Amino acid sequence: MASPSQPAWQRTLADNWQRRGPLAWSLWPLSLLMGGLVRLRQGLYLSGLLRRHVLPVPVIVVGNVVAGGAGKTPVVMTLVKHLQARGLHPGVVSRGYGRRTQDCREVQDDSPVHDVGDEPALIRRNTGVPVFVATRRIEAARALLQAHPQTNVLVSDDGLQHYALARDIEICVFDDRGVGNGFLLPAGPLREPWPRYVDLVLHTGNRPAFTGYTARRALAAQAERIDGSRVDLVALAQDGRPLLAVAGTARPQAFFDMLQALGLPLTLTVARPDHDDYASWQRPLDRDYTLLCTEKDALKLWAHHPDALAVPLNFAPEPAFFAALDRLLDEAQLSSPHGHPTP
Image (cartoon, rainbow, N blue to C red; front, side, top):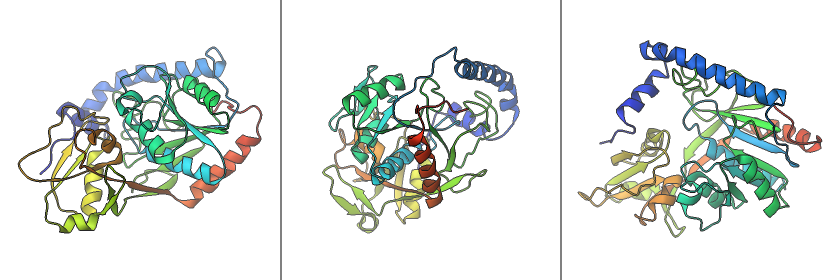
C-alpha cells in the first residue's frame, strides 16, 4: 500500500519533463524566455558587470542543472570526508533551503532543523565540519572563514547557478532522469542549457544517460535509533511487526525500492514532499508499525516520533572520480588567486 508522492499536477509535470509531448511543446515558448534570461545573467557575470566574489581558499561547488534533487547532499558529505582524509580542513556553505530563518548563521550540533535546513543539519551531524547557511552563499562563506580561519577549502552544497560565488571546481550531479526532455523550465527540467562546461560529472543513479563518473548507492545494513544505537534490518524483517516507511525527499520511491531490495516487507509507504517538516503528519494508528525513514527525515521526525529508525545511505563514487578530483584540487591549491571564474 502506498500514498502518492506528489500532488497530481506535480506528477503530471514531472512525467512530461521526461518526454517532448504536447504539454512540453505548449510550454516551450516560455522555456525560450527562460533561456534568454539565463544567458543574460551568465553574460553579466562573465563580462564583469555583475561582480563575482573571489575567496582566499579553493571553492568546490556541488550542484546540478536539473530541477529537483539528484543526490547532491550525499555527494557533499562523501566529498567532505575525502577532503578530511587528505588532511584538509573543509567547511560547507548552503542556502539552507526550507528553513524559517533568513539570516546568516552557523549550524550547531543542537541547531533546530527548522532554523538551518534539514540538509545542512544532516551534513553537520554526519561530518562534524563547520557549516554556515545564508541566503547569499558568499555571506555564509565569509562568515565561516572568519569564524574558522583554519578552513582551507570550501564546499558549496548546491549553487551551480549562484554565479556570484567564484569557484575553482564544479561538480555536476545527475540521477537516472539525466536531462529529461532537454528543455529548460517550465517545458523541461533544466535550470540552464546542457551541455555546459563543468569540471566533473557524477551520476548517482543506475543508468547514466551520458559520459561521466558513476557512484554506488546502497542502504546500510543497520538502522539508527535516536540515541545512536543501531538495529539490524534483517532483524526487523523477521520480528513480525508491520513496517511503515516514510520519506520526504525528491524521490521517495527510490528509498522504498532500496528497502524492499534488502528484503524488507513494507506494509505501508508514505511519500511526503521534499523537505517536509512533518509538523502536520499523523502516524497511522491502525497497527503497531515499526517506522523507517531516511537520515534527513529522522532529524525532523524524531521530535514527534522518537522511535523512528533512520536508515543511512552508503554512497561511494568510483575511485577514478576521486583521482580526477584530487588532480583538480592540487591545481586549485597552487593557483593564485583562488576562485577563478569557470566558463
